[in-house]
Length: 145
Image (cartoon, rainbow, N blue to C red):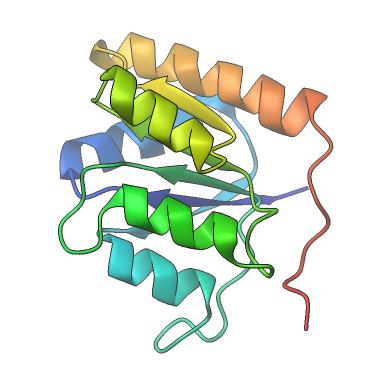
C-alpha cells in the first residue's frame, strides 16, 4: 500500500530531512509538499491547481508558515466536515506550552517538536511510520462527495 503524506513546511532543509527520513523508513509513499498554509488549503480542498490532489493519509503541519499559518490551517481542517478526519501531526520547532495546548484544543492528532540532526529525524519518522501506518487504522479515503 502506498500512502499519501502531505507536508506543509516552508523550510527547504526540513523538507529535505523529511524526504530523506521517509526514504530511510522504506515506507511506500507519495510526499506532497506545500510551502505555505494557502497552498495546503488549496490542496486539501482540491482547488486550482490541485483539482486531482489525493486525500492525504497523514498531514505533517508546521505552525510557523508564511501567509496563513499552521494554526489557522489546523483550525480550518478540523472544522471542515470533509477534512476533519484526516490525521494532522504538528511538526514544529515550537515547544511553547500555549502552542501545544492550542493545537490539541483545535484537535491536532499529535504534536512533535522537530528533533535535532539527521538521526533524530530518521528515528522520529520510523516511530511515525510504526504508529500511523502500522498500529493505527486510518479513516478510509478518497475524499467524500
